[in-house]
Length: 117
Image (cartoon, rainbow, N blue to C red; front, side, top):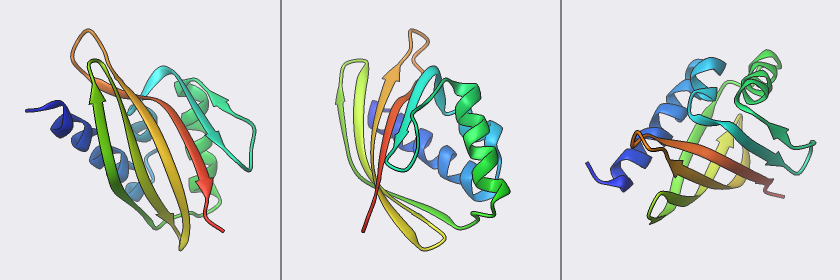
């Protein structure tokens, strides 16, 4: 499997976890020291805090999720991806940075989300 295929698998696992409301599975797609930045809130740092953020999203009732990967660029052990995310009809543009660990596993290192207006 190519790096591109592994990254697509990561993003598909994340989307499935979103759709099933599984915050633990969502967080498992992120590196232990990952950072999540969205325009409407303070940055969230660390896998545990990202899990808690997803708990909050699911608690307030966000249920319908879809991801559209627009591009993936890989350079060695690092990659970035541009994506469009829809949740309950609200759209956001997302830039993800992923890193490949020494074990060959790709995880999301950083995510920046900007809501569409």
